[in-house]
Amino acid sequence: MKKLTGAVLLVGSPQNMPDIRYATGFTAPDPVVFLQEGRKKHLVVSLLELERARRVTKNVTIWAAEALKIRGKFNRTLSGWTSGLLRQLEIRAVVVPPEFPIAVAEKLRQSGIRVRVSESTLFPQRQIKTDEELARIAECQRAAVQAMLAAVRHLALAHVDGKGFLRVDMNLVTSETIRALINKVLLDHHCMGQGTIVAGGPQAADPHEVGFGPLRYGESIVIDIFPQHLDHGYWGDLTRTVVKGAPSAALQKIYHAVKAAHAAALSMVKAGVTASRVHEAAVSVIRRRGFQNSVTDGKTQGFIHSTGHGVGLNIHEMPRVGLRSARLKTGNVITVEPGLYYREIGSVRIEDLIVVTPTGWKPLAVCEHFFQV
Image 1 (cartoon, rainbow, N blue to C red):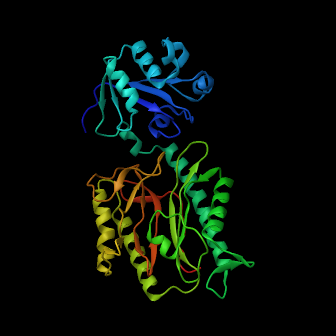
Image 2: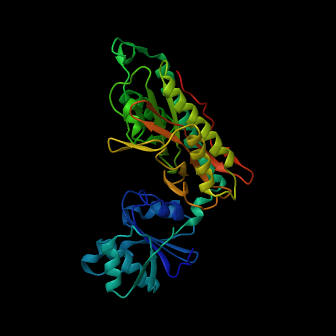
């Protein structure tokens, strides 16, 4: 990793930029300007957010945009805020992330500021979770477990009608009703479900299809719950695949292959092991079980994604658990989630969220493995 030269500069909403939230402890929907030079941190906010920013941050100098002596029409623009802060601090070079606003960058360059886009993450320390962060992620993961249990209990109550649809008290059981139930449980735990997946049958062959319409007897139902806490902003992530009734022999074969791949990947996890070895362990099991990736009618089927990803203030963050050779470190929080996806037979994904330790891993919360309910 190249050493960063220049002060680190971020511009945007802390609600959408976890690096700002991580560095300051402050969040808001409106954009701010953050700058870090060595250990010194600076945050520019509007008057509306001034007192709250001072209250919730530690070791951060808070600036009201109005106090930066920005001239004319620029006193209400992010370019003006940024230029005013850099002029006040006499900084002439900054390092920015790839997603930095181009209009702000152009304005800075026009004023003689050297702007360099970083080739690597600006806060690599985010990958190593502190005890406080682990507690927050575990809180979200426990909420996900409770929501999953509620969903599975509801499916277990269902009966099948003459058309093969699931019903509870004569009401159709749909992706939407199960998702609403999950999201309500998450809210009861002060978390929000965003994009909760309840996808049945052919829909689940698209790993990110949220699912819609009635659920059927004998079909696999992929349930993926990833709650974000409403206060501290950390995430959880949990997937189970269930079938109401008797699955086909082919679907059972898929389930057992994925479960074996999940166990094989977990057996490889410990500090010092490359993420690619964890991924390869899952891939190897799936191939030995006779499953290969293929393209049918222009659509890819099989194990079509990486084995996992980091989780923290982002639902998807470093380290990635795939083909990359980066080594896992103690304190990494990662998912392990192999899956197989077939439109004609059914799809299965099993996912757990774990923390890497020197000798292995620990779960952030425990959820039993369901299949037939």
